[in-house]
Image (tube, rainbow, N blue to C red; front, side, top):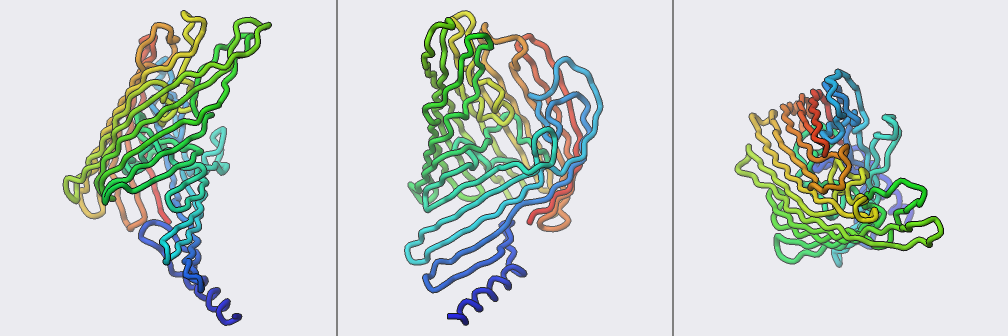
Length: 393
């Protein structure tokens, strides 16, 4: 018995010093005891250092966001050094070779703390058992695979890419296809409540429901998804009234995919549309664009239309050199009760050139340009140049 334990410890030490996987994670220990359940403890992540120069006032300092460009136009110049993108994750996997059942646990942080600090920030934390996932992870109504090779902390403005607390089930339905369903945090929808003495309140009740179909392989695929997002709130019209709960429903649809024309050229496209689902947009989450009061109809909340489209092209000039170019556009549908200072549309364009001196190291320069317009027809534009160094482990 003691001999077996010593062998396990020796095996762990060996893997700590030698096991580095191509997938970008470092195995700390791999054990395979008598029950044949292989267990692995690993870490993964990257360290990134950025230097950015901006040519317009923006609320977002680390990531370029056209939505965050301040109106009116000021053309101010500012610079920023940052390591806040740096990410660290630790996970555990167990696989039973007899029945092919798997169990995994994963948690991840970055250093994008509040008030522009480098305090740790929780990103992911979930348990996955076979086809079930429970915890905080990328929303089922998102597509992390389509994210282009960029340095910017923020994805393209119109992309659907957010993290959600959820319960998800994924099932293969063909050799290349799978279908996933999720129930997600009912507190996620971001609504605007009238600010008066009646003190209306957001009241999370019904979880958001999403479904996503994926067809393809690791390199090429197409996804189609939909989301239903109930939003509840408590309302009353006089101080003497009791609160009444009212529920409205938002919805969204998405098509997303990636095509490799050849080894050097990759095309990606995502489009989405709907009403009351803006919290899934990378720029609009927590910005109260899912639903707002209609002052022409007793301040009853109404959902807002949203349309997004993102296209990206990646080209490899040589084995160690590549570039990415993308365009993104988002538009909030017009309603005559929308305040003039709310954003009507925003778009951004980005391009970069990246050098890969080693397999897990990237150096490069990236430029971002964006413009936004509010419902008062005021416009502002801004651009940013960023140089970055990134090392994966």
